Length: 145
Length: 192
Image 1: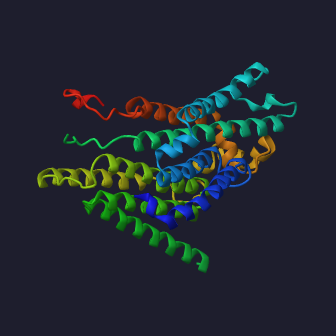
Image 2 (image 1 turned 30 degrees about the vertical axis):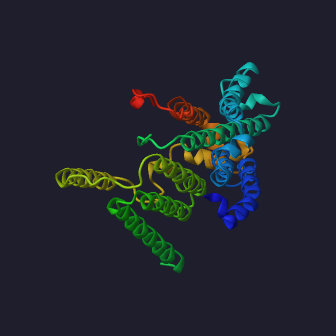
Image 3 (image 1 turned 90 degrees about the vertical axis):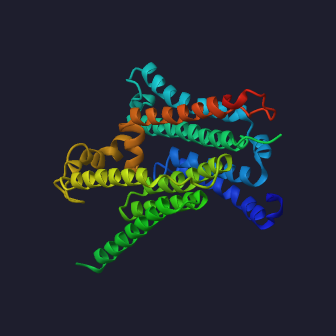
């Protein structure tokens, strides 16, 4: 059905790189302006979901295999909690970023950056996973054989 | 009153009226496709309201999640189920209506005790907020106070939130993650 919507397909194809770029901007610029890992993850996922809606789930899964999204899903929370453990190993309390660097302010900046990256990764993977799970199902109503 | 205040009041009233109209339309329509679209519009109006309130981070999230992702997920659900709402019997609708009005009245009654919006003596402006506003830049080196609070001062809460999202995705994967086999055996009605 979507194969005929040529304008939609071409315009979206042009837009997707900018959506992804904007998501990265929101991710890494969240310290200075509005945004952060959560919003960036959602926007990044939205780019891929748009791709999936237009070109089908199979094509999306070739770009983002399910092992990859699952890896992202788990590594995001691992990065976040790992930062906390790293702070403990370096002599601080859990999630106390002051000890991550010689200068407490640098430690805070580093900790916030890593933690936001973890949030972004998990949110991105969660959104793509949930979308693919929904889109990959057949209609529940009983079919006549 | 300056022109600025009046125009921002007008904007607030206009946005709230639009949100009210959208909510009534969502309740009255039977076509679920239109309902999903309208709830996306509702989220977008909410996001605009947050921008007017200078809560850009919240507005950002509302626009991305409420208007964007949840609309897509709801459409996905409609594709799996049906896009027509079944009519409920009038008696049940009346009970539901009475219950909603009662709860709404209680909530409005509760807001009467709240401090006025922007009141400088409100508790929210006294407890830890002044410290965040004054010292977060020196302590964390991050100019955006929202990010500093979210990721550093309230790092535990955000860790919990991230785990909630992780758990939600895991739950969806466990429930409907595996593509169903096309062939259904005779007994497989409840095998979802």
